[in-house]
Image (cartoon, rainbow over all chains, first blue to last red; front, top):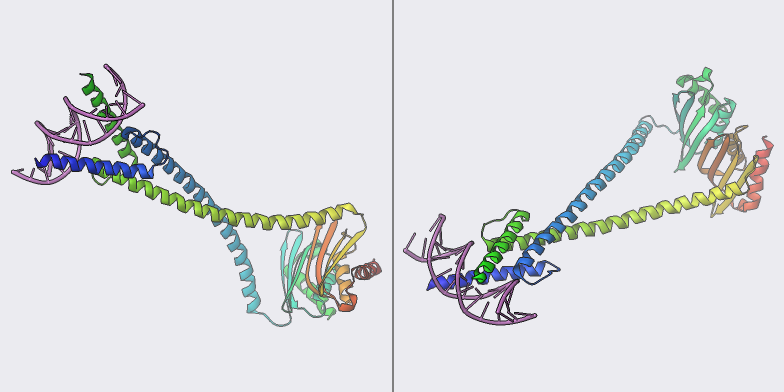
Amino acid sequence: MNHVEAERQRREKLNHRFYALRAVVPNVSRMDKASLLSDAVDYINELKAKIKDFESEKKRESKRVKMETMDNQSTVTTSTVVDQKRHCNSVNALEIDVKIIGNDAMIRVQSENVNHPGARLMSALKDLEFQVHHASISCVNEVMVQDVVVQVPKEMRNEDSLKSAILMRLDDQE
Amino acid sequence: MNHVEAERQRREKLNHRFYALRAVVPNVSRMDKASLLSDAVDYINELKAKIKDFESEKKRESKRVKMETMDNQSTVTTSTVVDQKRHCNSVNALEIDVKIIGNDAMIRVQSENVNHPGARLMSALKDLEFQVHHASISCVNEVMVQDVVVQVPKEMRNEDSLKSAILMRLDDQE
DNA sequence: GCGAACACGTGAACC
DNA sequence: TGGTTCACGTGTTCG
């Protein structure tokens, strides 16, 4: 009969598949087909759980990275805006920005690094009797940027008058 | 006979395992047992590849993080050392550290925030005709810390003489 | 000899 | 009506 041969081939095929399954499932406890099947099910569930862990971890990681890059972008954006401002009306001479916040003022001065601008700005702030909370001076390629935070007396808390008062005292020392 | 019953239970058990396998393998193309088995093998290989990807990615990630933390540690260590130095011989008056590196000097001054120490140090550096590359001034609780990097002429490149020269000019302005 | 596991041939069901 | 798949009972082997 052809039937018996077909059935024989079917069994053979099935057994090959069982061998293939044995090849990819580790730790096959016992060698019978039933145990192999349940071990395969367990193994697949283990792999699924592992992947789930990785994916949740990856999601957290990507959130962390996204927040970091957003932080970076905000700082970068700020400095970029400032740079554009700088390039807009940039002259060789000197430029000053003043921002008053409460009792304090944030002052930014950009100038050529000649005639000791750091000493001049600090001296001007001393003349005005501003208490310095923080100052940062950086010089790159003969351009000097100074950022200072000072406490100003209340009668001086006007951005324009403050700016001109500083400019005046800076010019005095040229 | 008992034999037929045992065989019946065996077949039943095997079929249950097949059902269980069907439950955990998605996209079972056809419903016959042979296809189920080969699909299961394919699926397991997919999961394995996915996990391998995740693990190599994770390894790269952990290397990156390790390098980042090492960077952080080195900077933290440096500032800690400096802090210890500060606390060691800290007095109310004024303290100065000088480190000469090539053409430049790193100067650190800690003092009370009275009499405008920022202006005084900058003025002293101007008197000495040191070019300021960078300066950072911070004030917390009436204690002011100044860190500056300057270029010094070669005839002044001695740490002790540099320190006393600065100290002298700071005292002049008291 | 018996429990477990497997392979085999056969009948049935289903396109 | 063949082709395919499944379930079943049976024979056989091994510990």
